[in-house]
Length: 201
Figure 1 (tube, rainbow, N blue to C red):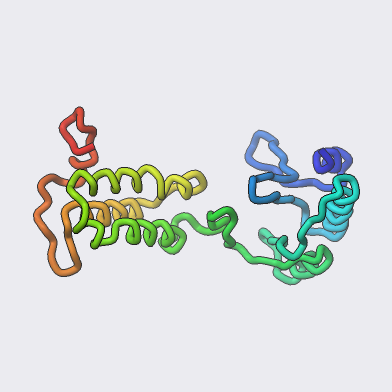
Figure 2: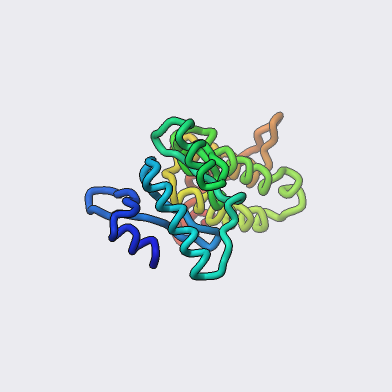
């Protein structure tokens, strides 16, 4: 591939991860590509040349208006200048990519707000009134196994958020509301235990 060859020739350096010497020049996803280079004019110019070469060889056009330049650990001014050279826009960390807040602090509650909001929306109180107990359990299980997993592929969930999500699920299961807490027939900790072990699964 062109980018790998460019890295071998020293035209771009990419960036290193961990102690194993893993060096990346790019990541490709279904929704696009992330290119990594050093924050200097030589590498940025080389990236521009590589992209132009790709366009000529493949016959495809890169949509620079939908592309962004993001700086990590550098001032905004050079990032804006690099973006101008590449005919892109610039962004600051954190920013959303494929639905994940890249560069966000996973220990902050604000980072997990979208997940908490999704839980609240999916476990709306009106749904509890139209579902049987078994239906409520099924909805909770589907949420528990799906909604936070995507975030957790990148971040470790703080204990405070775990407790908040458990509280939302518990309140939905037993029909609590803002004014009244109903009787919980079993503790939430026991409710999450496998059915084989006497819990609600």
